[in-house]
Length: 380
Image (cartoon, rainbow, N blue to C red; front, side, top):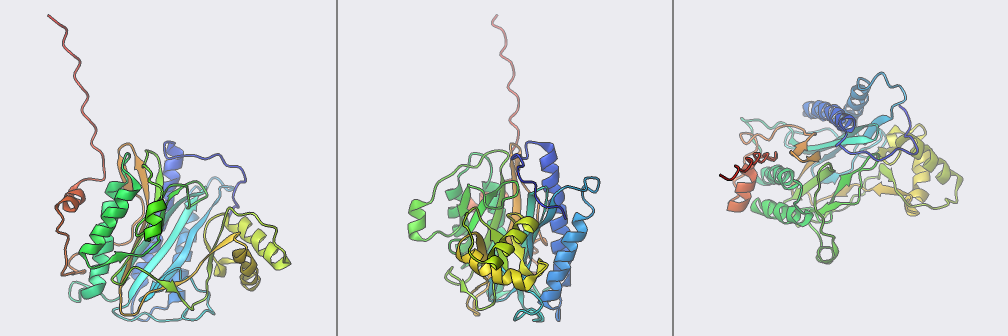
């Protein structure tokens, strides 16, 4: 796949060409995550599921914009499959611990992946329970977490409309999660997306610590912005810890530093050339062993961000919904999704009772056009 162009001018979805690239990337990501979800059967191995996702992304991208051979396109997030207490960022190589772990009925599985076309990315993440059906529904904490994440995501989509503010999203997500006995995971950020960058300046924090709430910047959503909504809720206290599983996802940062070791410089150069500023998995690198060694210095010096694997207590349930949203004058369009929420399969004994939130969820993500005002009649 082509490498990123060095000096691309920033573009927005006000341009139909950019809009179409976002939507095409969304189609690729949606198809890929649904293939992984369909393969999440009892006995399936995590590493095999990751390969299904990565192959689906590559295959889907190969059918997009085929006439422009130099167009930069590729993975915007490597397929990660995080099971039960492993919350996120588990994108193992074949030799990693738990890579060959087999799924069992009742396992809670969170899948995330993404594609980009010309640097315009669409990322999808969803949660399923292995073996769940109308005859064998999800109940208890698992159902509470999945329902909370679903309704919170629906609310976020409606709250991203132009003129609304990020801290209102924070408040409503916490209220919805609380209705199901859950909390958003602390310090998780949602970012405005830019071309070639998933971490734009505008941010939404879903469960800020006390000191963050006081210092976090209040920002207003505007037309033609794009947001990556990364929503995790837990039935626990809202805090996770780093897992003992090896880190395998990294991303280039904007920090500049003259690396001291040859292996560090080599790894940084190779990753920058192949992946730009998008997250990547070590398994996708040509020389994985050298890349892993080089990432030690790169992450220590801050030129690469390490996506450490996170875990929750085994007694708790965690659910994820991740999507890319387009903010337009006509409303908010969600261009990525996994499987549709099915209340006949996910049966929580809790529900939302707040009248204001129920009203919000009943509104459309679209914005109704105001009728044109009639011209004033001439004075008689």
